[in-house]
Length: 340
Image (cartoon, rainbow, N blue to C red; front, side, top):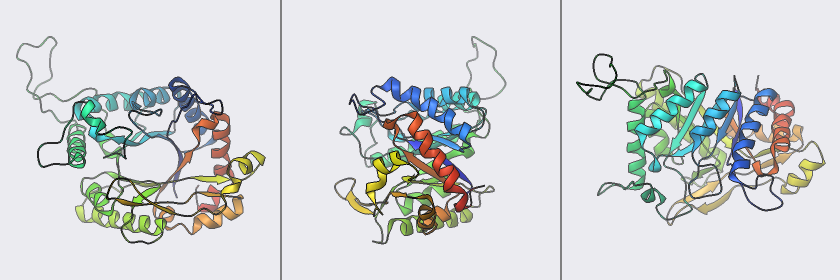
């Protein structure tokens, strides 16, 4: 494991038990947590994107704000639902946020997860062409996004422009050099992981996966990663790809930890359906004293296959406690897994 970061879903709720009672609370605390994580030595601050939900939705203002207040930590998403995105406008937003952050964006994109509303992307003005699915539409949006991130001109200039143009076809601005190589695809199935490798994207694999073999979650996920790497090599890409996995991991080092998570015990994988026909396997959570946690995580084959581990954090418990969760893993667990 080379890098360790956190992943926040950005939940907020008006409940008295929540430390994030509004969208403003979640956004501002997300910035504060990223700053705290950088000070603690973490490698990444990643955020989930959900529409029509009391969670983080439009990522680029948040990523730009974090980029302006930090200097080292990677800043990313896991994932942006491409069914909702105008890929050209997204490329402009992403380029601007990446320049503000000094080239630290790591953008996870994908088809997205089950939604809060029916076909929410239709409300954003998108609809798959006849004969195609919403997943096809997401992949098409992703391909257009990747293409324009190359920074090549494609638009014919106006012969009487308001401002002088450089020669030739025009590209989208602002362009951020290198961002194309920092795009990740969130893959739930083996086949989409292979597609991501062929397209030259890094791989994000989360805490759920399509159940394709009936084996334990971490074994299926490790096989997915190995298949991705084989496809990457076969595609002939010149750089080494990156692979991240997400886990819910809590080191029980004080009474707060034991009160929140000590009753979860060993945890186990679970099976469910993410739509009418897709059977999914959900990975277990880990909560134990650090020494025991290290031994359990060493047996997780997918963590061993990945280069980046993202810790899902309970953001509604507030910045101070989440910084404590991250610090406990960095200090007491991560070194035992080969981090730094």
